[in-house]
Image (cartoon, rainbow, N blue to C red; front, side):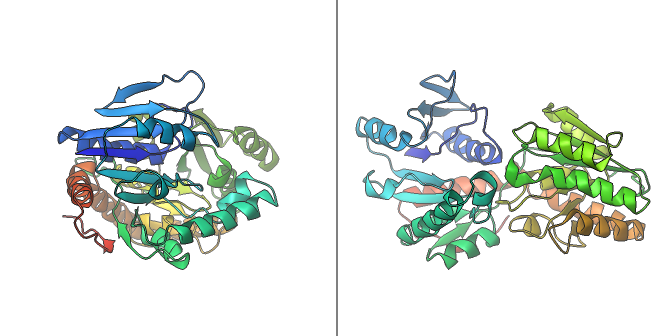
Length: 375
């Protein structure tokens, strides 16, 4: 079968992130099965017109505001596709109205308040209105997402048919769970693109809140991005320069080691499609401490695989960590339960289910409305 993914970014794009990682995992699995798999994406500085990554044929054309037209021109020169996957990142590709093939929409998250992180008023308001209107326009198109929070948001905007398919991770869970007493100084970590919606400066403020309560901690911030100056300014304002390290991007092996050594992964994002780094941390025997937002309240099971703050504030996150310090035995239970759950979410378990389902969609079989159970 011929399958096409439309996504603004591809894995080689310097701005690519978790969305592109999981997209490539799904598509490469389909390519391994012998399907003819394509991915159309925007051009970027220094990009090639096309290349092949893990068996997936990448084609690039146009940029912001023009790549839809480039995709349409390229599409007309192609043999018919069996399935077109229209991936939304705030703005979709409007494929159902020009591709003439079977279409499914792929959404990682309903952006909602994230619009305000990237755009000032009134552009942020226009963005939110446009997103709501787009979902209503697509209401008869089947959707595919990773968590119930996103599915609920889509339903509120009129979408009728949504399949929920969990993300997987490449991180191999530890063979055994080594001891890690929950004692100060606490070792904390964030692993994220440094983007406005990730609110990594809140993690710095959490360190300051713990310090004010007499708890010493050290935070390692892994990743790069445009909010690094804000984070550096927050470190200076909070007076925690000796307690925070910005590592920048690192290798997967280095990341796994840091996750393994940390007591908690902090995740103060505005919302997530799921939270891949949560499961990666869990695989290393490290629970997460997260904000109570869409996506993260599902990747982290409160008081089972980690802790969820009561409010979206550094003080609330610090308060939950303080409570955990008073219950070291429960912390060890969270570690084990997080580790056990992460084993079930390796790509080896999820990709066969995902590929089976996408093949059935391409063949026109009835969609599953709701979650696809993990084997």
